[in-house]
Image (cartoon, rainbow, N blue to C red; front, side):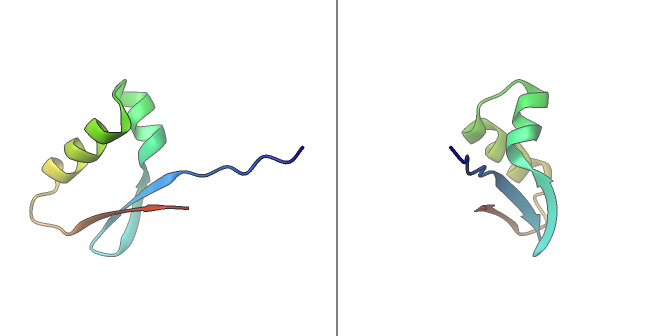
Length: 52
């Protein structure tokens, strides 16, 4: 059986920044909290998240 791996990417001003799932695992937090932390970490940039 073939697995399809999906992840969530963080984009800063349209440029790929990091894999949010790996970032959340490294920070030992859940995905929604990781998104809030990344958004708060870069207040002057447009932060978007895309699932791929």
